[in-house]
Image (cartoon, rainbow, N blue to C red; front, side, top):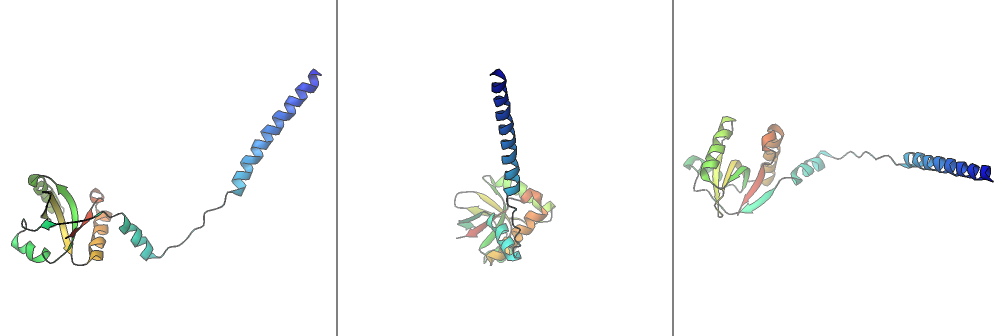
Length: 150
């Protein structure tokens, strides 16, 4: 009787061992492969645009020099690299950008924030393209965003 009980325990143990292993093998065999889908370039560009933060707000161009005012006054889409509560911090950041070859200028929001922009555009797609170029060339500015002037 004792041998029969031990044999039964051994058989159950083997059955469980092989059953679990079979289930694992089935999972591996049955797992479907992911289908590769080639997307057109236009879709890829759209995905890149999706992560650009866009804010629409009233801004004043009063802080611009006369030469910058003529260029940017007619434009509605501004590429923003920094936003600061204190003007002095914005000016320091602008100096850093000038050293890297940018031509920054400052916008003032109704809320008193100083937005540091490096360019503006009439066309939104042109602004988004420029944001992508900045992000791809300058890792430090991968949070560059788009301001739409009200």
